[in-house]
Length: 279
Image 1 (cartoon, rainbow, N blue to C red):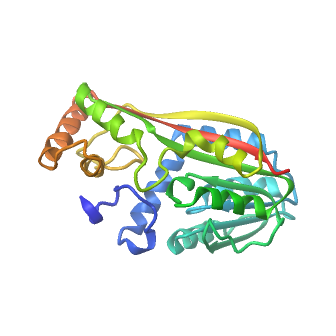
Image 2: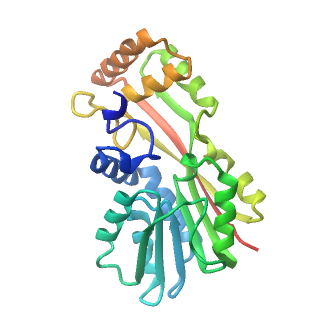
Image 3: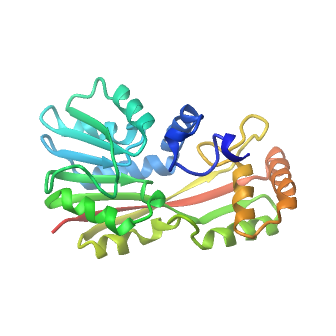
């Protein structure tokens, strides 16, 4: 569907797109995935946030994850959220109106944070690294703003784990093959979080995974499974990867939609979580 598709892949150019509200709604849907919720519950348990601490969420989006942690910070704590999108930040500010602790949301660059050195007890970043060109620099920034013994929480996706089953082996194979190799972005960073944290000098203390599964989708009601990319945008991605001929794009989309209407659609994707300590 190209640039008019609100379910196309990508969050790099949010403020340049006419479908900002649709993107925010899509992020809200993704936040409700069982895999996302499970990872966030695990994160909260592992971080053990306490009253008075300062928490920085890098790539905070509309703020739902950060705001869910705010209660642990008490009235003397502070929550800071940074995102590249002004639209996302404006939504986060609106949603933070009743938050008990001090809150500040601002537009910023994950790879060049405007926060002071050693000024936070916890830094978290969820599904943000996969959109950044320089992962090492971003994690080095997380380390810079963390206090000694500060905690880092990373949650991200490994798109190479995407499994699409529509009772058509050729579609399953071409989809998996296209995602094995990263192109244009670090889409499979989820499986490399430990390596990334180690390289930045962190001590990893906990890791986990969660798999999201879609077993039901009605293509006549929505162009995309709940919170996910559209099948049309996936077809475009396969064409770009050289796995699908341009004139076979319609066949790909139609085959998947027919399978979904016949209750023969299943898709799964694995996300990774990591907790680490700054020395």
